[in-house]
Length: 68
Image 1: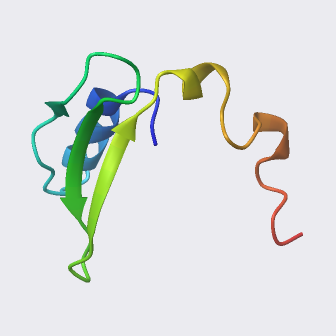
Image 2: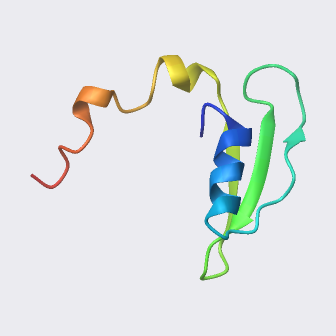
Protein backbone atom coordinates (compact mmCIF):
# COMPACT_ATOMS: atom_id res chain seq x y z
CA UNK A 1 0.00 0.00 0.00
CA UNK A 2 1.22 3.46 -0.87
CA UNK A 3 -0.13 6.94 -0.23
CA UNK A 4 0.44 8.04 -3.86
CA UNK A 5 0.22 5.41 -6.62
CA UNK A 6 1.43 7.75 -9.34
CA UNK A 7 4.56 8.70 -7.38
CA UNK A 8 5.26 5.06 -6.48
CA UNK A 9 4.86 3.94 -10.09
CA UNK A 10 7.13 6.74 -11.33
CA UNK A 11 9.78 5.74 -8.80
CA UNK A 12 9.68 2.12 -9.98
CA UNK A 13 9.81 3.18 -13.62
CA UNK A 14 12.76 5.42 -12.80
CA UNK A 15 14.57 2.41 -11.38
CA UNK A 16 13.98 0.41 -14.55
CA UNK A 17 11.05 -1.67 -13.29
CA UNK A 18 8.25 -2.28 -15.78
CA UNK A 19 4.90 -1.42 -14.21
CA UNK A 20 1.36 -1.55 -15.52
CA UNK A 21 -0.75 1.51 -16.07
CA UNK A 22 -2.70 2.77 -13.08
CA UNK A 23 -6.25 1.45 -12.89
CA UNK A 24 -8.97 3.16 -10.90
CA UNK A 25 -11.70 0.70 -9.96
CA UNK A 26 -13.33 3.11 -7.52
CA UNK A 27 -12.75 6.82 -6.97
CA UNK A 28 -12.87 6.34 -3.20
CA UNK A 29 -9.65 5.78 -1.25
CA UNK A 30 -8.37 2.25 -1.81
CA UNK A 31 -9.74 1.85 -5.33
CA UNK A 32 -6.57 2.70 -7.29
CA UNK A 33 -4.03 0.01 -8.28
CA UNK A 34 -1.07 -0.82 -10.51
CA UNK A 35 1.12 -3.89 -10.80
CA UNK A 36 4.67 -4.98 -11.47
CA UNK A 37 6.83 -8.13 -11.49
CA UNK A 38 10.00 -8.70 -9.50
CA UNK A 39 13.16 -10.31 -10.99
CA UNK A 40 11.98 -13.77 -9.87
CA UNK A 41 8.75 -13.42 -11.86
CA UNK A 42 6.47 -12.83 -8.87
CA UNK A 43 3.70 -10.35 -9.62
CA UNK A 44 2.70 -7.64 -7.17
CA UNK A 45 -0.29 -5.33 -6.89
CA UNK A 46 0.17 -1.89 -5.39
CA UNK A 47 -2.88 -0.24 -3.84
CA UNK A 48 -3.18 3.47 -3.17
CA UNK A 49 -4.49 4.38 0.28
CA UNK A 50 -4.15 8.12 0.74
CA UNK A 51 -4.86 7.70 4.45
CA UNK A 52 -1.39 6.09 4.76
CA UNK A 53 0.16 9.52 4.23
CA UNK A 54 -1.56 10.68 7.41
CA UNK A 55 -1.47 7.41 9.38
CA UNK A 56 1.27 4.99 8.24
CA UNK A 57 1.14 1.31 9.22
CA UNK A 58 4.55 1.68 10.91
CA UNK A 59 4.92 5.03 12.68
CA UNK A 60 7.95 7.03 11.59
CA UNK A 61 9.44 6.92 15.10
CA UNK A 62 9.33 3.09 15.08
CA UNK A 63 11.07 2.59 11.73
CA UNK A 64 14.56 1.17 11.70
CA UNK A 65 14.23 -0.59 15.05
CA UNK A 66 13.90 -4.09 13.63
CA UNK A 67 16.99 -6.23 14.06
CA UNK A 68 18.59 -4.08 16.75
